Length: 161
Image (cartoon, rainbow, N blue to C red; front, side, top):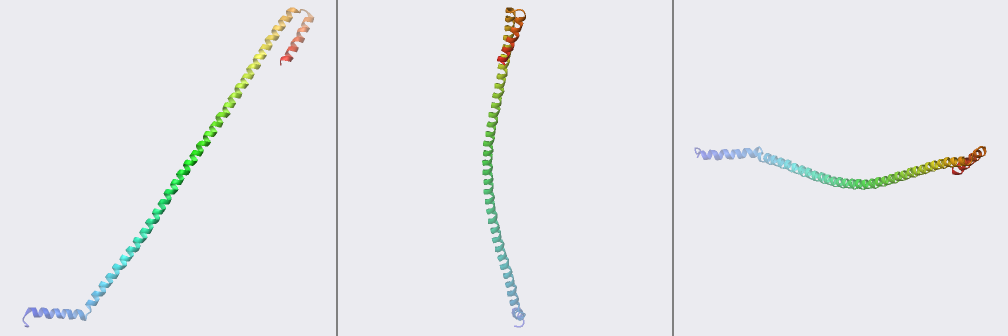
């Protein structure tokens, strides 16, 4: 039996197991496995925590995006209202300007008409005076005629102007 190699393998195996138990190898292996398990658990917990933080951050950014879109829509709506208001105001000012210029043009036309009428009256008066002077001059000759002509001219001028 001592010469049988299986016996020596069995004895070596038993000594190996006994030595391992004596040196507390199974406890060390268990401790290493427990530490590894704890480390993995901590990493998983940290990963869960990071995932929750990422989801919270994502939700916050989505909320901010929605708010930003609402703000942008409000700004666009307000800009449209202001543009419409500005357009109405501009049309109103344009209409007022056109009306004012139309009135100014009408006033200038009326002034031009009045000036033309005055000029025609002045020309007609001068022509009438000249014609009357010639007629009276032909009808009346001498000093009495000159005096009468001068008085008539002065009277006509004072009545027409």
